[in-house]
Length: 201
Image (tube, rainbow, N blue to C red):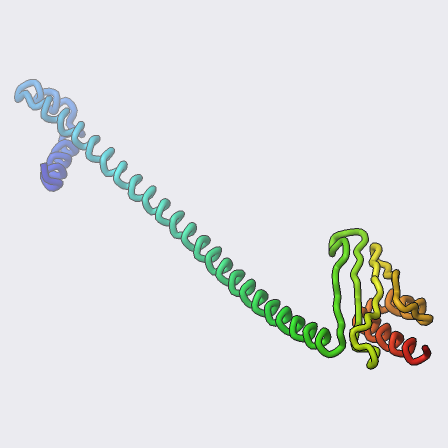
């Protein structure tokens, strides 16, 4: 049944409502009671259907809005993840450049100064770590002769053991190292002291 016909029937029913006695009489005479009841049921059914459709549309709109919000959050997370990946890539590239430069410098020192570093025990997270430092190319008469010491880091304090040959100034060098934490300066000064020891022999 088309909406126009439904509206026409509803209008007929509404026009009959004020004359209840007349309706009863007509219903009894004409037998249209079932038709009126059917029309009322159709109206109720139509209203329920329209209401259900409206609710379904409203729920769909809410679900669409929720999906839009989820999509926005996912897009933001994706963008944030992309930025983090870019930052990590840049940090990795920077670190690789630093490692490459340090490796070149170490090889330069090793080749020209006979400088070598060897970790002996412990590490960054250990309470105590030991590193062996050795130099050659100090004695021109015997370039392969090795001068060495072991640097010990116990918690935050440096000390030296097995210094060969012994250096008189080692205690002062260690005081300065523990004060400034400047390891490269300490190594340079130690090498200079090895040269002084050789000259005083």
